[in-house]
Length: 326
Image (cartoon, rainbow, N blue to C red; front, side, top):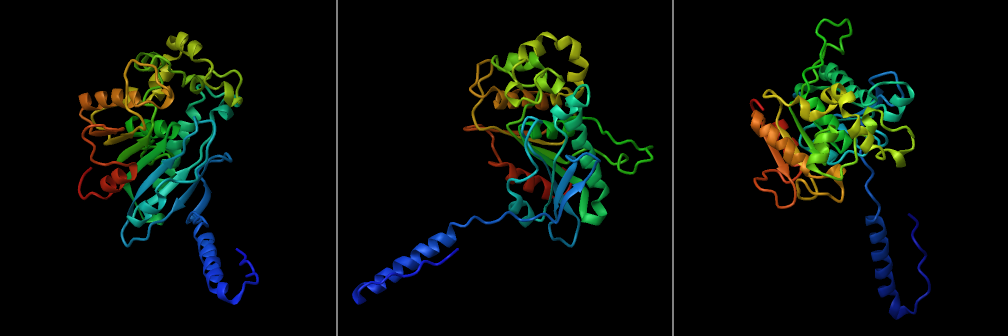
């Protein structure tokens, strides 16, 4: 930042002019944004594709640290692993952080993968296994891993949290032998179901999710991503096995980790919503199932009852650092 030259002022005015100049300079310096912390390891490949990379920030600790496993949002069609919300809070609390990229749905469609959502979800699982394989080298506690993300990244996090372990104990690949189970998950504006029938019952103007199962003939035109919900709903029975495999709601069971759900607006079940893709209706219906199954959960939205942790970072720091079992 350059310092402006002080112009000529009469002797009686120079002091005030100098003070004004110094204040202006100080404000200019103060306005400079702080650069985000660079990763300890950047763009490390966990797979062969250009999108299968992750960043790792190591928290300084004499003993193995918990880990926040961040999955970015963007409908599985856009987005990037940086920035990571609350990165500095986690590191200051002695919690390391990983943030991943993954292959997009339009790339899966182009490759003929069916259903295309397999790529982003299985990439998340593989990245988690890869990270676990690095636990000793990176000073991580391999059990205390909490997933987080927004929107599609939240859906991926919940899928990992609920799905049966994808580890292959007999595999010749040491990474594939690693567990995909989580200590907890704390997510922002998650889609908790990918079943069009459920979504329409919960929120009548739902429009999201068809692209995950290939109902996106214009791919990669993102403006048309959500244009085929009616076809998706009509064809539900034909893709029901895929829905049962890739919708988080389908996998809830009593042995699942605790879950935190954050939404920006209150729920209104059975009502059209301004943003049906990120409505708290998703959270209400998932929490009902979690409570019926005996899985601990916390649902947060404006004026929600029984809120213990106002923000995602509060929850992750508390649960990941809490002594004893989860």
